[in-house]
Amino acid sequence: MNKVDIIRLSFFFGILAVMALWEIAAPRRPRGYPKALRWASNLGVVAVYLILVRLIFPVLPAGVADAAYRGGYGFFGYVGLPFWPSVVLGVVILDLVIYLQHLMFHAVPFLWRFHMMHHADLDIDVSTGLRFHPVEIVLSTILKIAVVAALGPPLLAVVAFEVLLNGTAMFNHGNVYLPLGLDRVLRLFVITPDMHRVHHSVTIRETNSNFGFNLPWWDRLFGTYRAQPVKGHLGMTIGLSHIRDTKRCINLGGMLALPIKGDLGSYPIGRAGREPTP
Image 1 (cartoon, rainbow, N blue to C red):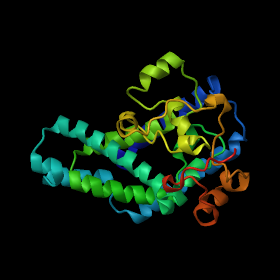
Image 2 (image 1 turned 120 degrees about the horizontal axis):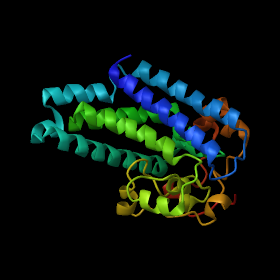
Image 3 (image 1 turned 180 degrees about the vertical axis):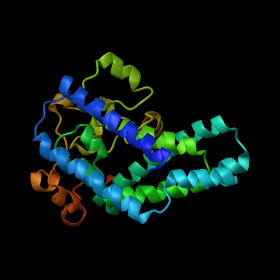
Image 4 (image 1 turned 30 degrees about the horizontal axis):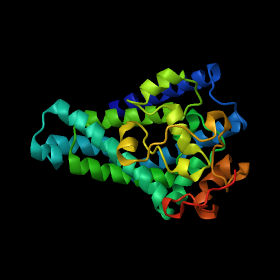
């Protein structure tokens, strides 16, 4: 295990533990489904895609970044930016790429097939932030490797970005209470749980909003920001209206089979307009 892996795993388990304890101490919403089975399945998905990524990719984005930056390849090598501006700009550009990627997974029906497993969770908590179909993770990794190769950012930029992305994904999916005044301030700089929870509503116009994971500015800039769910955070229904059975939403095997057996519903952006009935 190299230093990058140790750093990422340390932040991963640390943030996961903090969020899990916070959810126990100050939950935002009452839990509607058994936590043990959901967590076993959601964390089981993590194990599957980590193994798959390691088997498929001999070099991950951090390795590509290190080689490109040392060799002076890519955009940053061409323009000759100093180290720290390259780090900051690298993180910001990678975050924009992930925002656009997320938007595409909602817009293209083929990509939505895999992303809808993330949205099919019937509750939302820190474990939902780790629940992505292995095929989606593979496609995302390919995109990140391509972007990193084109940019040639410093290794620190890629490591910082991946730590931030993983950490903020767990934070903004958390079932945790934040005072409303604090939430209003924080969402100017980072995506808060109340902001991202809107994205997990069964209501199409809410599902297709708030696509950011880390920086909140892209949603405002591109017109995809929605401040609050129409029914409020306690009244909203989480998940997809057309997939509500626990076998496909909570059982690991059913979750992984969703791209093959699951109906797309009306959620892809091109199909939007017919609101489902929760």
